[in-house]
Structure formats: C-alpha cells, structure tokens
Length: 180
Image (cartoon, rainbow, N blue to C red; front, side, top):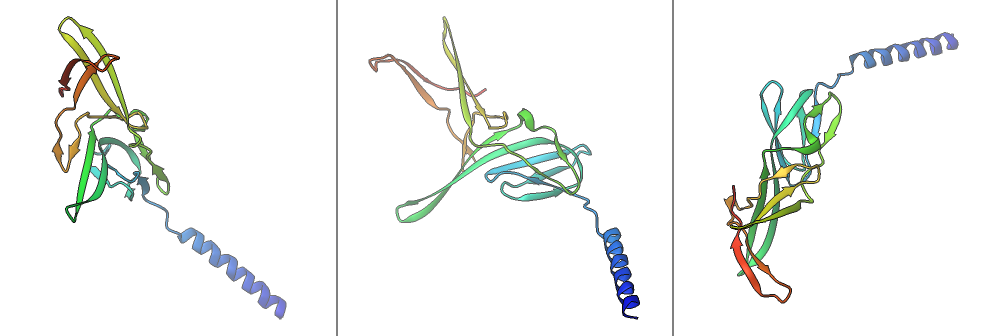
C-alpha cells in the first residue's frame, strides 16, 4: 500500500511538472538596454518609434529596429554663489551609426547597445590659397557619428575659436569653426 501511494505521488508530481512546463508563458518581447547617459529613438520596420532612455531597459516587440536618433548627455552639478547649479551638455546623432544598425530584438533576449562615450574628436586639415580648412568629426565607441554642435541646457553653443601658432608661440592666424 505504501509503495502504491509513493508511486501515485511520483506520477502526480511528474504530471504537475509537465502541466507547468506546458502552461509557462513564453516571452513575447525582447529587451534593449542603452548605456547610462545615452538616449535613443528606435524605429521599427513597421514604422513606429520607441524612445529608450539611457540606463534603463525597454521591452520591445521582436524585430529589426534602426536607430533614428541618439543623444549623449552629460549632467554636471556645481555650487555657484551658495546655490546648486545643474548643467546638461548634449551632442546628437542622426547617423550613421557604425556597427549598431540594425538592432535585432529577439523574444526573451536582451540586446545591450554599446555606444556613446568615450567620444573621439577627429580633425583633418587642408590648406589652399584662400586659407586653411580644419574639419571636425565626433565619433562614438561603436563608430557612430555625432554632430559637432554641442548643446548646453538645450541651447547650441558657439563654434569653437582657434589659433594657429608657431613653435615660439607667435599667433600666425586665428578664427573660429563654422558649422555646415
């Protein structure tokens, strides 16, 4: 009798485990993680746009997404005349996004996007009879390109100024970058 009861308990446990395995919900979304300080806008193949805030997870329907917009944000806090002052710096990108596109979301899986800082400033220079042209490119760690326009608290900042000096420190020429 004890043997039949033990056998019955084992059969019931196996049956219950099978029911739980069959009834377990299947994942219907995947997860996209953006690094802290990088906000993204992803566009699905169906045309819908989703915002992914840096440092958070976004549950998305499976499929291929393209990055429509990326913003690298740097927030700083300081004391000024006894008051706390917050400043937000931002550079933005509309692409190209290097090795990041397309973003493939698979149900039950997480895609961690590794972009943004460290940002590399690249320059190239060429001389002509009319002067010197110096180009500036800002490139993120995944090869994505950012606009050279830097925003502070939502306002575009003036183009940087520069001086060309010789070895003795004498200023040979000066000017400022021009956007566009």
